Image 1 (cartoon, rainbow, N blue to C red):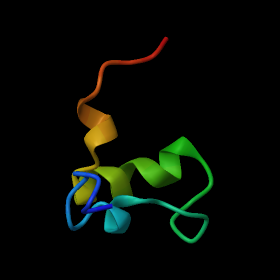
Image 2: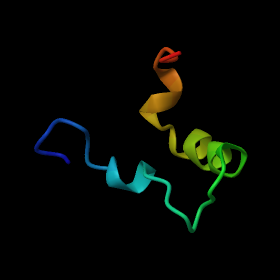
Image 3: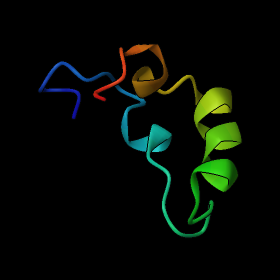
Image 4: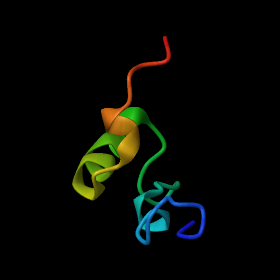
Length: 44
């Protein structure tokens, strides 16, 4: 990931089923990690 320019900690920002399976469960994790998807404009 780092070689692709995504940053050293990119993999640590990926939520999996141990974090949650719904948006409501995963959102706090993404906020805590500062996931870049939270700063992107919505697709829809």
